[in-house]
Image 1 (cartoon, rainbow, N blue to C red):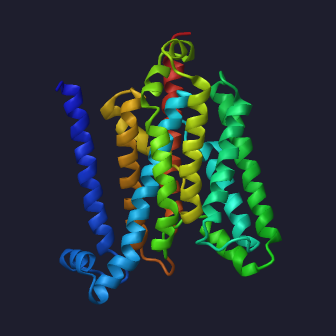
Image 2: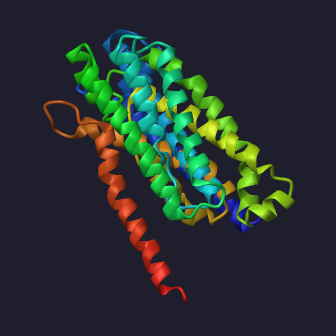
Image 3: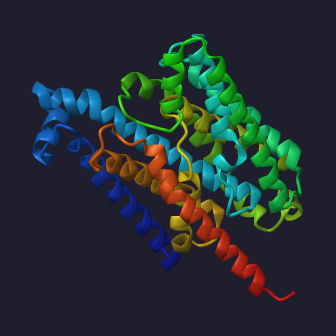
Length: 337
């Protein structure tokens, strides 16, 4: 095993250990603080108050944080590999906003309950339309500017649709609930939410992971990738469906949680190199760790009501995104004309 491969496996092992540590902390932290022994005892024994707290309340929340974070991290890494654009992230292209609009419609007009299978299906359909529209509008050889402008237009339109739904909602209490839900939160999530979303996450992972070699070929350019046997149209469609399924299910059960798909791949890219195939799994692990850490943070912050986890990821993600933009600008300014 060469040094590069050893370094890659060490990174994955370190991320897996970090995830395990964060998961244990997530089971311990809450209004009723539990020691590590009490948390693990409640997890495996399930008897008494500790068992109810850990297994019925904190375990579904922790698992959802891991699954949603991993899905967002993997989706961001896949989009960056597909578009060969380090700024690519589902939130920039309107997928979460479209999923939120579709899910909000289902809830606001009582088409389906919050735990109904129809809600994530609607979220998936909305995300699919958004990302598919981006690929269609931006075109095969779109520049970064065109891609971002197309994504901004789609995200703005989806946001306007969501605002319209909130204004037209017949029940003001439902509208208020949706408004808070859109900020992104894992509070009060149950095993029902986990069981609804988990199958869609698995489908998303399979669709995105199967294209690892194609992403590697794309680094040589689309013509070179096609000459190596990559079906570009099939690749785009597979990635579009994979991202839509994962992001749609995530938004349907937890609201909009942005920037995880942007930050996670970049946290590991320097360690694994520029090969997009090698970024996928570490990016997913980093996303799971990042969202779980953010969810732990909102429970530790002193506040009358629990801060939304989507607010925390945005507070982290916006400065990170701006730093990336300045870095790209410095590289362009320093490049020879």
